Length: 216
Image (cartoon, rainbow, N blue to C red; front, top):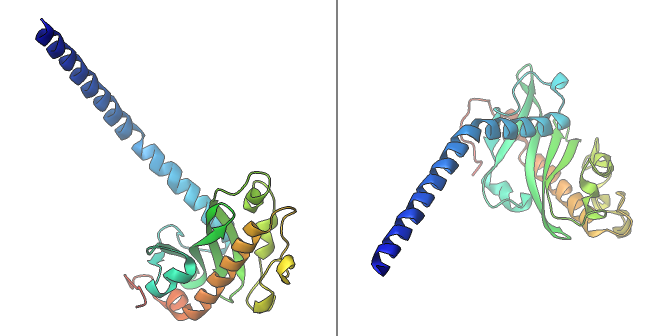
């Protein structure tokens, strides 16, 4: 009797698991394309915020090259990610570089930095972080326009030694009650500019169809 009861329950449990797995599989297939489209739209929106479509004649999402291995440590990346290139009439006019500031108040701050051909900042956006709501999250454009303060800046304007928040003797504002977050972002944007300058030929001059170009 006990054996029959256990066997019946096992069958019911197995059937339940099978049905659940089937529902999850169908749901996954049914939403996969929509999720991919949403992710592509979000990535596209972020890229074109830095380099407007009016400036380019290529597809920023597909014109990419892998992050040169030599740049990874300074960019805070564990592995190569895509650097997007903006072109006009075939000429690279800007690159959009992924980076991670590891020294945020609550850990990693993932950003992208657009750098114009002349070395100036086209724009910076925070993609992901865990900074304190109401304080550190002001790096989001949805919360404040602080991060827009990098626009047009370069390693010469201001001078490299002034690429710090005001509390450290630099020219960039910190937030009231929060210095660590803006300090981390400012330092990482500076490092991105330095890396782009060091690898300028590879990033701006490599043909679009050059394939893998890890710069090793």
